[in-house]
Image 1 (spheres, one colour):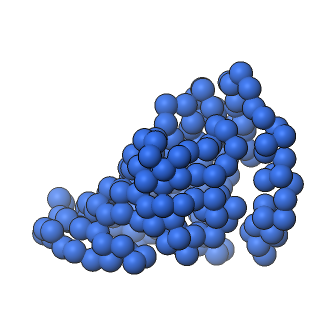
Image 2 (spheres, helix red, strand yellow):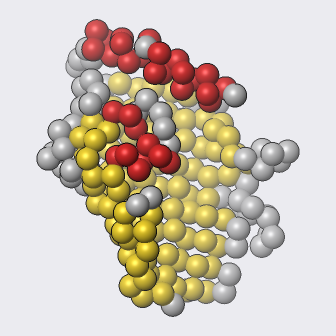
Image 3 (spheres, helix red, strand yellow):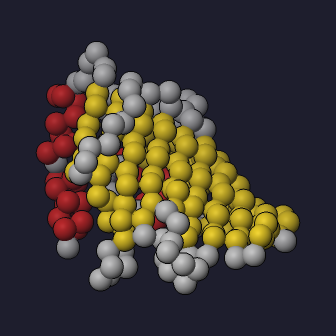
Length: 193
């Protein structure tokens, strides 16, 4: 049992509690804060480059055998997002974020999870759903299907990615520099390597 263990993650303090509710299972709960610059140190991409400030978070990691499930929640207070609508956000605005990663059960205690399901809810209207499968040759997880929705539920296709925008207006002029600029092109080239 862990109670009130303090640590640092990407330069910021966090507090961790943990327990083993049953044999072969470890449940960790943590709370802390994170700077936008630290997020870029972890994942540098066009989105994280448009973040500024700091926000508090709380999370849970459930390790059952070699399967890992996670949950992360934040109100994103203190974090600004410099993107076109509907993704723009001033630092003082509250925008609830919930990220869940639910591992599929492995075949046996020695096996890694064969895949997982990811769900991201941002505010009252934005939803992302992804499913990943483990590549047997490399052991890495790869996205097999996903869906993003605004003002609706993300409907997963049989394969590939789907987009559902039930919104009255999107300013494409505001999005074009981001979608066609070198920042996104460079990220795509790095992802293909």
